[in-house]
Image 1 (cartoon, helix red, strand yellow):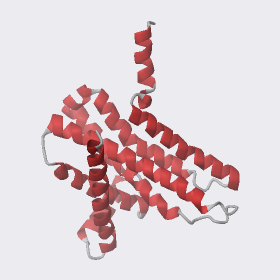
Image 2 (spheres, rainbow, N blue to C red):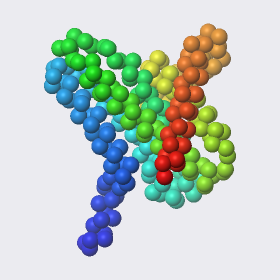
Image 3 (spheres, helix red, strand yellow):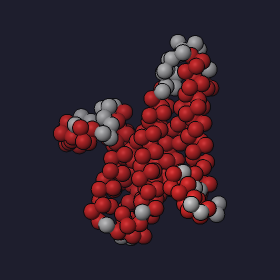
Image 4 (tube, helix red, strand yellow):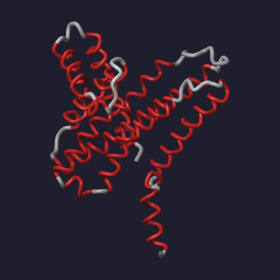
Length: 232
């Protein structure tokens, strides 16, 4: 195997290290994940191990859009792209869901009095990584739509998507559904969603949260997008 072939093969296995952004993301996620076993060793409890799983789920949509950028033929094939897009829609709320793990700050203070600053740094780092993965994944999908599918104003793509993300965050946090239940328990999931939408007064707290979070996440996205352009 020559050197060029070896480098190509290496890139296929370590694509998540190809760019400077990917390398920084990987380093940031490793930092977050290292904090969890440090806490486990200190407290003797597995209290926050779920954060690692949540980060893995948050990485899935970024992985999907990353692969779309590498496999242009998937975008050109409408059937394949439709399947990938709906799979991405099912998982993208997981990236933004992690910001609600900040609710857990202050929990479990019987764990040998773990310093609050440590828990804040740990949970905030996971939330930050989830937010970055979500923003980057949405940006990659936006580029696919605006350059290869059809052109539209960015808000016509971003806000409806962020509204669905916020709704996904709500049903994940409060109704305790996850993305897999679109396959394993779709009827109950659809029923609960329809009940919320058909009875907005009774479910106003849920819809208020969705509205608030959809605006917040849209502003997060647009701000980071504009900053990235401004510093070039």
